[in-house]
Length: 127
Image 1 (cartoon, rainbow, N blue to C red):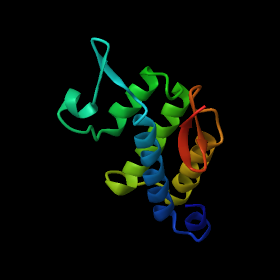
Image 2: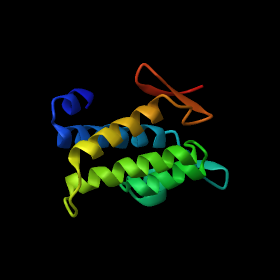
Image 3: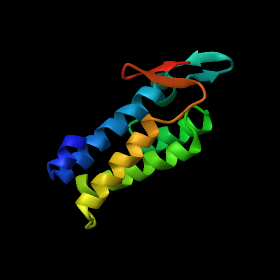
């Protein structure tokens, strides 16, 4: 994404960060455990299939304290900018937005986004 930005491929940079941040949420969401009467149940059992909504996953990650609120907001901002270009409903400054999502994502990856998990060799693992 950084190389795309440096090459002037701003839409591609936004898209790549959008994909990476969505994957980040998916991997962190895999750490969520659902319980019913103290018995662990799967997302599939609970919802009759996987949930695809990014915002719903972010809300649960925040409520479960697997992702701190400030990073939920940053991921929401990345998703909103991504949607501006993936589902073009509004006009934006691709160069400015590309730089913004790069900065937000780097901040998330370099932060203590969770008290319980960290990133080791590109994977989200328990501390």
